[in-house]
Amino acid sequence: MWAPQVEVLNHPSIGGFLTHCGWNSTIESIVNGVPMIAWPLYAEQKMNACLLTEDIGASIRVTTMESDGMVTRGDIRSMVRKILVDQEGRNIRARIKELKNIAAKALAEGGSSYNVLFQFAEICIQHLSTKAFGA
Image 1 (cartoon, rainbow, N blue to C red):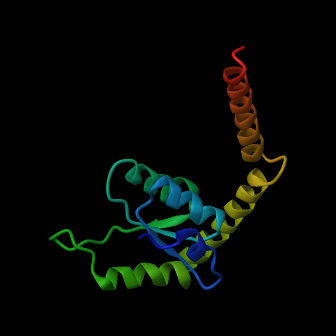
Image 2 (image 1 turned 180 degrees about the horizontal axis):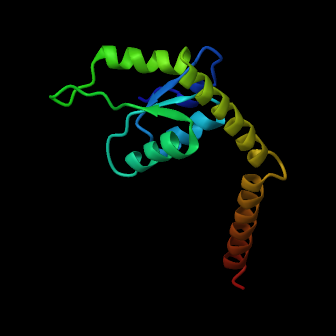
């Protein structure tokens, strides 16, 4: 079973999220205002990690690896410290707070995401009604 990630990310004690940067995890982290440590594994996760780190400023990226490709606990400790304590982390936390507010507006009634989902639901209802009544 998977952990209840949204509930965990929504908890006030969470100061950061070590994530593979899948799109769902990324969105959940932003919506909950949690800065990220990006550790992409494959596929679009690498692109998402670059976007989050270099363009958006909502994460730091796992970069230090041993010659055998392993990341040490010291590397992880250092990244957690960056997110929670260092100036770089303060900047990331401020940026993620900004993004959280933007996401909240988009999801609120009348917001862009709310409106698009509402329009999509309307189209589905019309399509189902047309099929049900043979029109």
